[in-house]
Amino acid sequence: MSAPKPLLELTELGVSIWLDDLDRNRLETGGLADLVANRCVRGVTTNPSIFEKAISSGAAAYAADLATLTASGADTDTAIRRLTTDDVRAACDVLREVYDSSDHVDGRVSIEVDPRLADDTETTIAQALELWATVDRPNALIKIPATRAGLPAITAAIAAGVSVNVTLIFAVERYLEVVGAYEEGLRQAAGNGHDLATIHSVASFFVSRVDVAIDARLDAMGTDEAAALRGRAAIANARLAWAAHRESLSSPSWQALAAQGAHPQRPLWASTGVKDPAYDDTRYVVDLAVDGCVNTMPEPTLDAVADHGTVRGDTVTGTADASAVVWQQLEALGISEAAVCAELEAEGVQKFIDAWEQLRATVATAMGAA
View 1: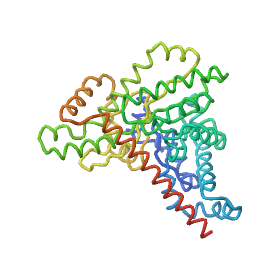
View 2: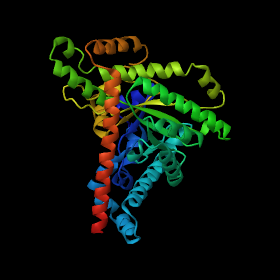
View 3: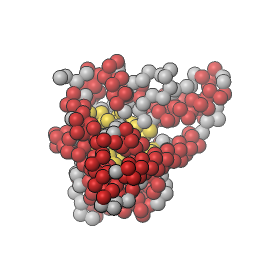
View 4: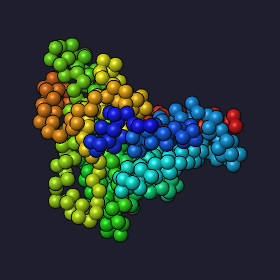
């Protein structure tokens, strides 16, 4: 079977297509392998809400493990770690060929530290190292949020030779701090004797949530000027992040690391499922297509792009000035990028905590019935 033309075009352009989903049924039925073979999927991302959905909707696939864990006296958190790391390890094995054939750039599978640790640097570091050792696959990525407390944890994990997916990035200013944390981690890693060529990272910029937050503010204004800016903030924000990424690669600090074999930290577009049905359901993919990015999509978005996505080549390079104008216009209406992004970060952490607690409740109930 040949992959759909839009997915092939994105891949040929240099966009790495990752799936924002994982469950044991995909692993056991060969569904994930099929997406890799026939849908150009080159990586997988997970989060607490994905695992909660996987275990609550696919209870039969987890029943045997849950029974064994219950019989052994495992507590809920231990069971969650066992189930999720087993799934991520298996997904890493499915994607191992992609990992090897891409010179270790793609074929990556992400697993997140406990979101309740978002404000706890030291425990985040400890858990990141624990997850890395437990999954025990070179193509894993450990997800650490780009909170204030997360930044030094990112540095410490990289310094220990752990590959990291930095998640929950909204503001370009915070992204620049993430770049700094990554570079400092690489410098420390070199000092610790690690081969920098073995360390990889992506920086996950959340897209659709920005439009949801900004559009609500614009709609409340009820003016033509506000209406004209609906749906423009998220793509402009991501394009400005890309411009910042490209500029960072020309800095002396990065050039020194690159000379030691370091890999660029690729921007990853996350939260690419369109929330407003008035918008084209492929916009956060085709309008953010550029060589060297990652786009992680929930399966409905992947299917939409495959079915009717119109790939127009590079839609990001050279857009920084126009994107800056969008934000200037929003600021002129009283919409603060800093305030919106801070709100989205706090909401994002809380959403993941809520999903984690729901996951704990789901697993506890299943263990009680085992």
